[in-house]
Image (tube, rainbow, N blue to C red; front, top):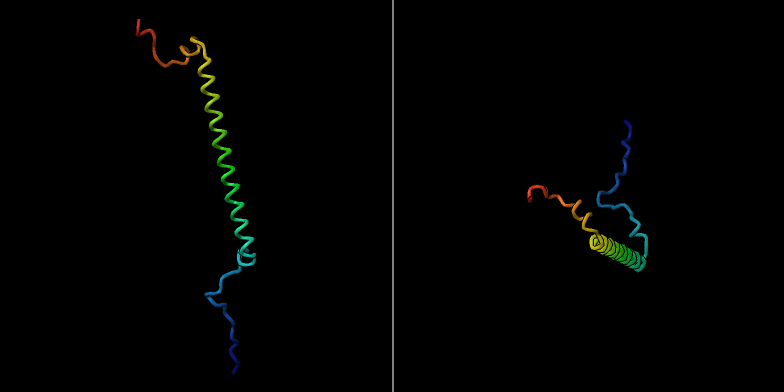
Length: 81
């Protein structure tokens, strides 16, 4: 009779090694901190851009002539005669 070959099966509780496991914990903390810092800076930049656009729209609306305001009005002024 032939001998049965034993196949070694990987253990189910073995987790694949991740980059986080290979890096130093201090380095991971630094990277996560930098990621958070960059995200906050991006959010602040978006907020500032939105604020600038809002102010620009307000100034443009403020400087419109009566003719432009009347032209943009959706009311039918003939009904008010």
